[in-house]
Length: 443
Image (cartoon, rainbow, N blue to C red; front, side, top):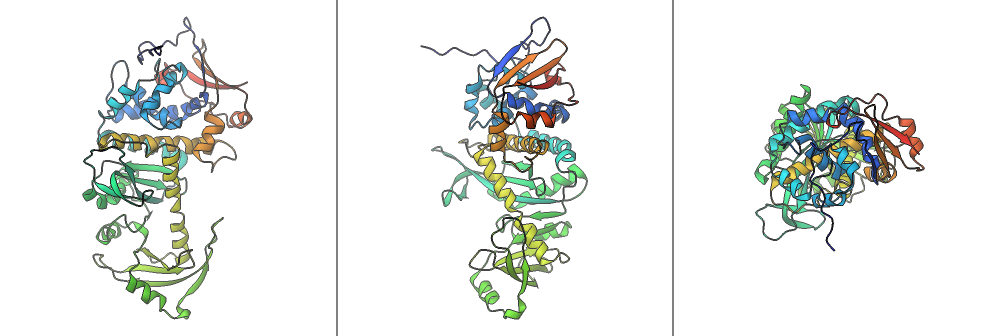
């Protein structure tokens, strides 16, 4: 028996008039919780400003909303969009009568360019920053290789931690604001020769966005060479990184007299190793212009001392070590991007395709960080838990005669949290839904 063929996604057929009312049922009514944020950020204007391609049937904002929906709904691959071909309510979220087919989404992703992603990221972070990170100063940076699982490819080899060896992969770069844990930059359009300059490209991105350079950067020893650290120092940006530990270097550190070591307490909640000892020195590095500060710390949970490098000579060693320890947040954030946003579920050997996907990951991360900040007691909750408790909720979507889009959630134990949050309070009209206003109700 042949499966019923879904209709083609089309904005022109979308009917929201009083003469033809809609009442749709969906198993993921919680996705409409993100609409107030998308309208407040003027997502449709951000897409137009980024000059994304579109068609008369599927405009650019609808195409990107349908791709973003896959990230928000814990779907691993673009091909899984077929799971929602007959969910008219989810199509309504994107401003369509149906979600596009996988052939459209795959083709569309290859029509985008790096300039589109750059402009969208700039507009997204510019409008999101006042809400989630109004005083952003410190950023954690990291590379993440996305493995290629096909046969023939022309990709460069990068070290894959989960496999314990190098393999063909797409190298991606991410930046996360430390305090809010919001991903604020991504780039998957990288070659190995371009990797060392990506840190300064992020600095330029943030300067263009805010008019100021980042105040602090935290990254590991493999992100940039020492010559690039000089450029960061000359730019006036403070950094803390880790120095690679050679055998002769460790021998010298371990032979230092006991009286040169100073005790300190790293009182980060839930940290296992809090009592440490450190030695603060000023040293010279090859390819680095001028002096640099080195802090050797033992008691960090490793067999050998950890060596921290920084161009800031005013902060105390304890402050530098504690702030760098919070860099683990980006590793946790990348872990979430892999486990929930399915960052690694790609097999494309074209970087352009992956670049759009990592941009959608940044947007989805921002959506969930906003939702967590709005729900009392859930500020630190991870996306997977938020999805299970709030987004994966069945309900109905009804178009009322007075230009209201009424989303009624089925009875669930967490509904009182949503009712208290009042996410729909003063929600502006939704341009891609003929200026209807969203309203949430609870069974």
